[in-house]
Amino acid sequence: MNIFRRIFKIGQAETHSAIDQLEDPIKMTEQGIRDMKEDLEKSLRALAEVKAMAIRARNDADQYQSKAADYENKAVQLLQRAHKGDLETTEADRLAGEALLKKEENGKLSENAKSDQERFEKSVKQLDASVKNLRSTISKWENELKTLKSRVTVSNATKTINKQLAQIDSSSTVTLLERMKEKVAVEEALAESYGEIAHESRSVDEEIDKALQHSEVKRASDDVATLKAKLGLAQAPAQE
Image 1 (cartoon, rainbow, N blue to C red):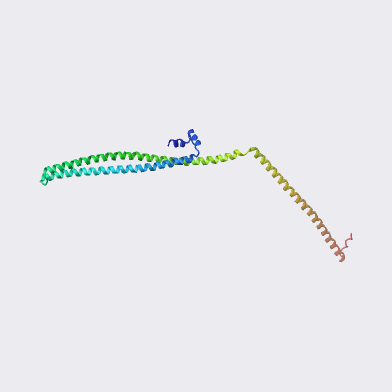
Image 2: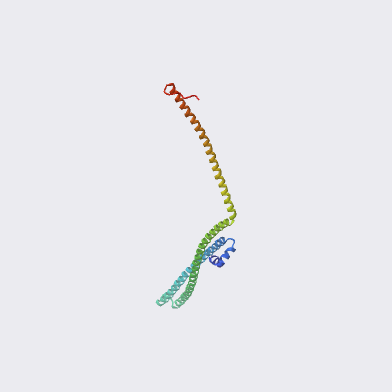
């Protein structure tokens, strides 16, 4: 129990030192709690046995007391019968004496049983207090174990994150960022170049279409002039 008290006194330097020296403090603690629960079961069995002994002693005391009273009553009846002439006085006195001896014997047995009862009941109180204390201690340590498990989980997660951060080289990170910037700049320039090429292609096509469109308009205008000349509406266009 002392080792677990040292382990569970959170906040003290000895505790951290003790935990650091353990290969697995959680498994050690769980085993300790299992051991205490076994002790609790043994204590409960012992408590039940002592309680049974106290009950038996009480019952024995009552029975012996009842027998003592019964022997005293029998002695009285014997003397009464002798007084009435139903029994010889000598015989009645002898038997009454035997009955009184039995009464005294059972009386002593009753007192001894009462003494045993008191002793057992005192032991029952002590065992009961120990059982309650053990139950309270187990409950406390189970709660402490939950806290310890949570702390281990958090510490492991923190350690993992810090380890990852520690492995990151700031200079390599800057280099990586510069490479990414250069790559993005190249991609942007390439995209702009493709845009200009596409625009140039469209400009040439537009010039060709415009020239063709101008020729078609001129041809249509000449056809209209020729038709007017045939109709005598206007002078035909001069042949080029």
